[in-house]
Amino acid sequence: MLSRVAENLYWHGRYLERAEDLGRLINVNAHLMLDLPRKISPGWAPLIRITASQEGFDELFDEAGERQVVRFLLADERNPGSILSSLHQARENLRAARDLVPREVWEETNNLYLLAQDQLTGNISKRRRHEFLRTMILRCQQISGMLTDTMSHDHAWNFMLLGRYQERADMTTRILDVRSADLLPKDVEDLIPYDQLQWMSVLKSLTAYQMYRRHVRLRVRGPDVLRFLLRDPAFPRSVAFCLQQLEDCLAELPDHEDTLRVVARLTRMIDQMDAHELVEGELTEFLDRIQSELVQIGDSVVETWFQTV
Image 1 (spheres, rainbow, N blue to C red):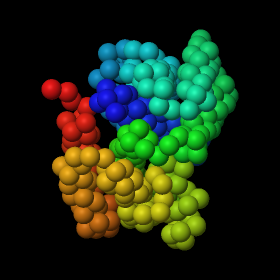
Image 2 (image 1 turned 30 degrees about the vertical axis):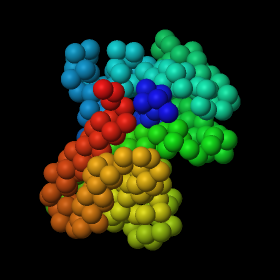
Image 3 (image 1 turned 180 degrees about the vertical axis):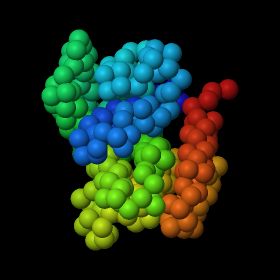
């Protein structure tokens, strides 16, 4: 397979996952604003920090209100990380590699972008926004399901999965990082119920709440949420699950040793963490280290398979 085509498939996987994850995040944040009293609500600014787009946002807007943040993350073509931009990039990367995927997958990806282009114009009401995001998330999942069931699980498939699971692991750590920084003081007793709501919002941002309650069977607490989202081997959006998928994909590709070594190092780091100590004060530093390792994984993928001499 040409390195250029492999790179297109890798970035299709990343951009499609990015659009879906961002849609979940916007919807969950809207619900959190309804649950928390206005005086302690984190507002919409954390979403800009989660997506690492603070500089670009500040160049365009003077305040981080709901209208500005939602417009920026949904449909602003000046934001390369917006849902509309991500769906555009997913389509363009798949266009360049469309001979390697089922025709139905290309058609659905193209139709999803056209739907977003049509729906994300003019003033977007809250109801219209919610309906679009719900549809977009379901159609992203449909594309992923079609790929799983109709595409040969060969090298092309492995490159798409590398993109998907690297992006998913990155988003999980970003949500944990920013949401945990916004948590309320632990020594104010009358705020304890709201602290639980905020950890619940972390779970719901990753569609993890139901599975957490099923498998952990404890009330929602920081250390338990952290262990579940970082270390649970069976939940598809935990970092540990994503790293295992990366490892499985890499094992099928040639010249995988250097990249696999970085994945194994990150896996060991997560296995050895102490969730209670992290929640008490070192969580941000730990998550920064995870994100740094994920960047190194991405750099290794590029250097090994995409760079041409």
